[in-house]
Length: 365
Image (cartoon, rainbow, N blue to C red):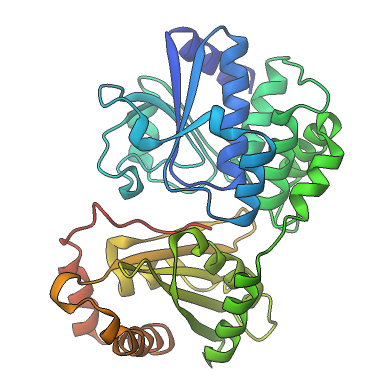
């Protein structure tokens, strides 16, 4: 760790400023970014955090308000076009569609998801790459921070958000490694305990329970797989799909839970969970949704992922067709998830991969 810590320190010291990019708004990405920001600022660097997506999840919105994250973090569209060198945390996907076509060349990558060896070699040559299978990327930043002998202030936002990140991304430490538990304990020592409890008991709006009821009423199950939809949903409520999927996968007879919704009349958003260790969940989703899908697997083998499917617009859009559209999406999703695909269906997905993926993205929460 000492050698890697010195490499990161040298990389940061060679920069005039450090933009940090997170491709998905969730507690682990936020916690990772905040700890790296703290390290870089203590090394005398100016830091700006840019995020993809939006703060739609109720917990994320609570974090945004309580810690005034709007003064620290900015939408990716506000990142100057000429800025390409950056740090990428809680992700190692440089050509991520969630970047909305923006080209980045990370000089620092810190992630806890699997990636190909090419990414490791290519980006470690000219910067710093740390990719390790632990429960949360924030765990890696915590280890680095304390190895550098930096001290977090008591009740600091960095410690509180970091502890929340590890706690949340490991599902309340259920999926935690020993390293995650140690990192969580060290962060919790400096965290604001009252704010931490507040962030754990974030309010869920009435609309969530209406969506959850719809998901239960609409579910279909077959051989350990569950698929359900909640119909039309606004982008600000779309993160509720992930909360519902997290709840449904806890049913003992279910090994795969898929939830979907039609977001802003434009895309079908899919949240997916799988606890079957014998299945390649990445291949399962890729065979059905192609390059518009993605999966991350926790250190203890729990798979989380999803997909975005762009819907046709223009002539085929309209309120008078909403019923038919929901019916069509439901039939398609039921078939894709509950049935085995034929060779021709898999080929059709591969052929469709060459389409408009720039505006698509996959849900990792």
